[in-house]
Length: 282
Image (cartoon, rainbow, N blue to C red; front, side, top):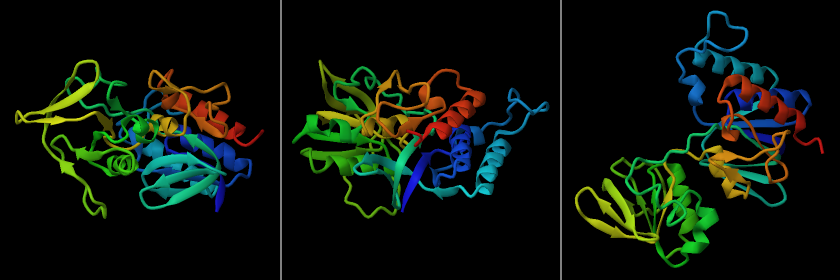
């Protein structure tokens, strides 16, 4: 099946986009994993219509129920990749879904571990997108920093191109039940080193590893990560959009915290509404 629009993220921006798109009689699918930042917020005190405040979890659940009443479809899964051929293809851990348009609404929470040297070598051996930068490491030895499904997906993207690839968990436990061959290094990292480019990783046990590049894939893929994979413009860790929430890739929209600006529910709801009203109108 090809959906009219797939929305990645079920927070205020994603739900708002779904409500407006569904009322336009579009076939809408929301894919999300977990309840995001809102669901973990103890109390929301500054949102219109709740004089005594409301818990973030309750507000989140209210949005989900509202979308389900309109028969919006939901899939609880982790998105690891986004691509385009004849339609957009959204790849999750367990399946693949196709749509004429995609709205990114997972917020912005790129996880950059607090490791000495990691930020200094961004763009000089440290990357956040395997499919974007694998070519630059053809035949070379690289590593993926992470311990979850997203890290494994990035490793699989790199394997056919690079000379070797290992997963660095930085002392964390690797996920289980994955039917893939993975070279896992669980040592705790002390520092990334090099001169003009990254060349070496030093671990806390005083051992070292020579590498040409490290791909950061900690946690799950964010909207920014997915935007980069498909070539959408990202500046200052925010997805660039126009007044209609359109990215630089036709058919790809973004809304909410991932576009920057005021990180508030009201702004996310507005941008989601704008995306839901605009998607597939041209």
